[in-house]
Amino acid sequence: MRKYKSNRRVQIDDSQLPKNDGEDGDEGDESRMRLKPSGSNVSEDQEPFMGIKVRRKASLHRDVRGDYIDVPSNPYLMKILQKQGDNQVLFADKVLKFTSSGKMKRRILLITDFAIYIVDPDTDTLKRRIALAAVEKMFLSELSDNFFAIIIPTEYDVLMASTRKTEIVGVLVEATKSSSDYELEVVFSNSFEYHAAAELVKEVQFEEVEGGVKTRIVRK
Image 1: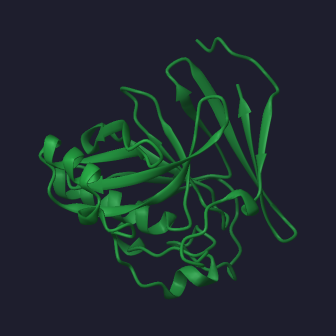
Image 2: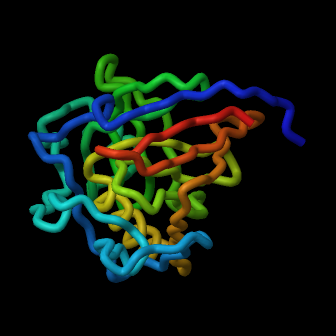
């Protein structure tokens, strides 16, 4: 039962999203993902993300490094990983995370072969650890934005933005496949719901406009 009903909207444009080393694209291994489109139509001239996703031009020619923040040089990050018994970092970068109140916070996203870590770079605080086995699916729009949602049914979900979104999706798909017997579902839709908190459901709406993509986050 949903206890919240509000028309409050948070609107974000591309100028508010983080830029990584001057690049605004992202790259990953799309060919191995199991993708599920929404019911909307996709024109033939759109750059296919398995026939669904509109890709940014820069994402087609990106060198994938995985660790963009040099984790071994950060003693606190290494301490977190060693404490949890994680040794293999598959991805590390700064991202934007959306709080339950709709604020955008800069965070470090770490993905290992066992878990997802969300770290506050200003305080060196581990904010959350999510076991890969707890992740059910990911939501993305069908447009060329930077947003993605990680759905964790046993807890609450995560909405983030990164210019390396495609690489993040690819890493998570491969990591869950390697650590378990199932393949992470990746769903594309220009409107989807996620649990911003245990009792708080929000809807993310995407609309293609001149010069970019308009994004709205609506509390249900």
